[in-house]
Image (tube, rainbow, N blue to C red; front, side, top):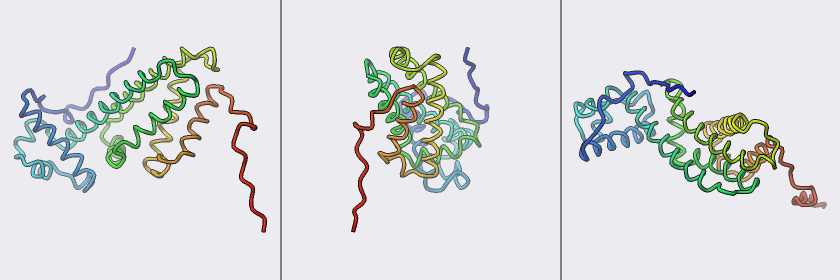
Length: 226
């Protein structure tokens, strides 16, 4: 049974917006938080600055967010919700996908999640361990792992998989670590076809999928002799 991780009280919003006007205010505050975080960084960011740039009073901000940690939490929740919506599309797209199609779908989904608004995701990713909000993105990974496990059950006879849930967890955790590391230290890899091929090879190898015979692969280029 899963247990829910409760966020510290100081990090939660004071109240939930109910009217259209208040929802627009909260949306403006979250969008401003993203902009200021990207431009100035976490240490320099203040609630006074966010309120000023959002065009509202600090008092109005404090009606919904007690501090900047609460604003960051709201921003992370929004990013996680957008990622989850994307994963629902991935699960639907799988359908009766072949083994090769399924592997490609999952790898590209992982890359797309990291590439989408990459500068903001990187800035947020740096702060997650410090703010204790890693659970929100862990939720996204569980959603992706669940979709992968369901697909593995369908294709089980074609793969070397004893425990679909555990296999999915290991694969998603591994690919997530690699894409996060790329985002933080080598962001150019996220757009590299070679990086994508290596991730597909990693996944295919773990699932017991054989690579194409050597005769079907592109022959290595020969060096020109002078």
